[in-house]
Image (cartoon, rainbow, N blue to C red; front, side):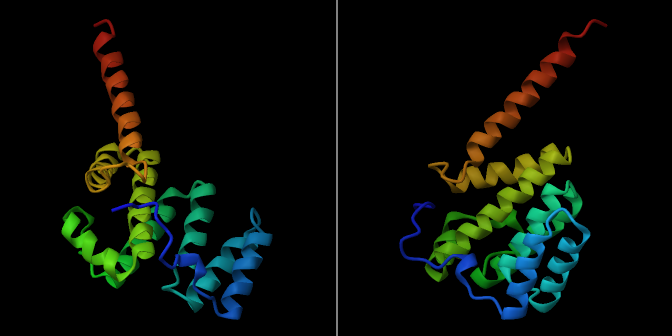
Length: 175
């Protein structure tokens, strides 16, 4: 499956927002870096708790504010919501090609969103120093994306190279 083919699918940000939610998202964008930005995003989330664009806004806000635990919660919520719509298992480790095929028939764009949310959670886990948890997710993504169109295999190579250099650094240290 070509995970870069968007020719025949709707993407999460193409879904129309209710005007009050749209206004709050715009407010958050205008006030980025100020206290009001988070409040606007949280109010948008209260009005549209299952809207993926709102969740992406919250994720980005928390990630770039270095509030990584909050970003992880939002990434996992995005996976839960998109997974439910795609009838995917709640446990990401149970994903396989058969399930992805069924999900792609439901909504290719939403499936790609789901997989990117899994990658986002992996990146946050890396930043939190939870390497094993991140690596497990990256291994799953790499197995599902044989052409590495989402970049999980390349990221996994970097993680493994870093771990190898770190291991050799500790092994070479004088006793």
